[in-house]
Length: 410
Image (cartoon, rainbow, N blue to C red; front, side):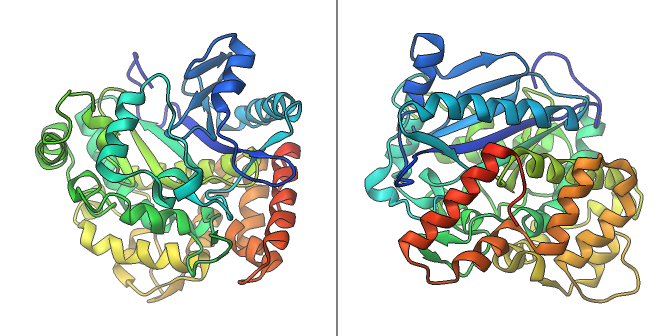
């Protein structure tokens, strides 16, 4: 989201991350550079493909598909993303590889299989690796969906940041798709976010409490968030290669260089149709919050990260079955009569309030999740909690087929 400043909810930027794996074994394949070279004739970090671009990530087995420009219509990108998935899979098939969805590889050993991207922008990745050792699930085994929501000025930023902070804790109830690590159930339906919470403990300033601090102007954000990040990194970043926007790893980050807030707590789903369904509903709920549909922006600003984090921690563990017992939090979303509610029922309430604003695809996708559970729940229903490696490969091969066909996993 660069150049022109867009107003609140005028456009959305979307990024989807997928793993490249060996088709027969599902072993991660650190060959994204070769994929890009096959298409462009050279090793590059970006492949321009019209409305959708391909990009590299920290590790060489992950490819990102993103809107080349922010879109005014999220539903219009379903066919575009699905078409790029098919195009990549056709190229990979020649080498016995394919794309695999979900937010974490269920069998990867990050300590032996991690390959850091060695090309363009490597100096930043190498710095991270030097500080943190990026061979861990919270670094090298995670795929997410990023949503970029625009703001045109400081007033809009304040309203948007207040709303996004309120929505963040409940997002994994819809999106959790990482129930397995190292071949077994972790006890967390969103294992990606649980691993992510601990991956930068050496420099806690970079993530804070994951839920962003209650700051609502650019000046306050620089003072309370960016300045401590810069001070924490300074002894390590002697070459000054790190951008403060890039180093901020909260669950939602302010990109003042782009005029956008990027939401980062969304696990990638089994196919673009489901990713965009979740994106539409998150945008609709955030828009309703900004407009003061249930409570004023003033009341939203009163919540500290310490109030919101316990709800998030519950939700990454139990997803939709997490019971929210904070009555004041429920009131923020217009739930006035109940003192406790499952996260699924809260999302069902929000969906019923806002479904007229959603596309047919979004309604179909959200109803699938509300009826059958988040993707993690559906995966565990097939694998069980202590599956064999063969069983895991069989289920995740089905997920790869869902990605290829752009259809939900039952």
